[in-house]
Image (cartoon, rainbow, N blue to C red; front, side, top):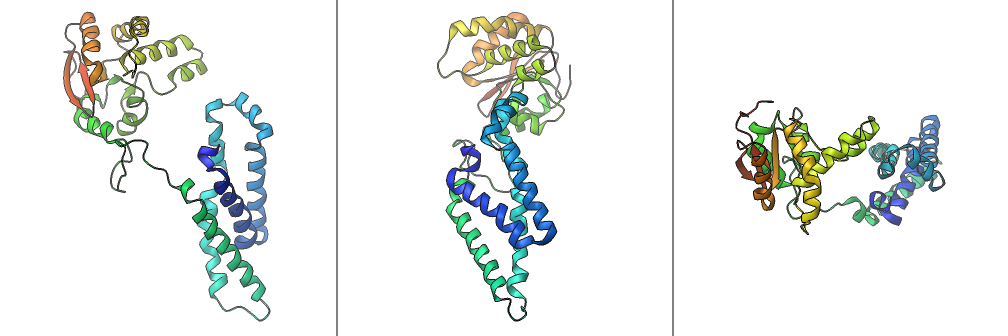
Length: 281
């Protein structure tokens, strides 16, 4: 929760938003409704006493996403509504209202400045880097691979490390089928077919790059990789450059027609001979 809210500065900012915007900026029945709704969601979804109940009924790793039920972006967007109350001429005796509005606005500005660190998220790596609004907000290595391999994988059934196909390539190629997307075992378990999920997860482990190579683990998951290839679940494979020789040898032991097509963004694309650019089979 601290990672997504930002600790004490983030909590102070959010609490001020939940109080100031509905009760001082919006006001009247609409403001009261917004305040009650926001507090109800906070108490029901983000109450630490209820967190264990939520985790039993949704995936525990996704519990932090309940933060998004609080309409903080909406509350921020309503802040400019304070301007008319400060700028227009007020009737006599209304100076108190103007002071309350000004004080609320100053408190919000201070809270945003104080919580700046929680609002600013640095790139996850040097490869991710800062992006301009016109660029894909994705890791550059993955977009480089996507541009180079797009005509081969846009309609393929691709087996690749989760950090590429499981996340970013799927955003760029909606017709591409991911053999082992992120949390694949969870999805198939929910569908009542845990064995299929474990099979695909093990196949993904075979093609990923390990910082500390584990030859025993590679041999344990190799049968799953071979089954995924032989059964046609995957007709394209992308692997880190450091693993290309090992994975290509395993592919060619199944079908000598498998070959390297291109290298880009730190990944190597491998296809069998019968696959043409843009085909599904």
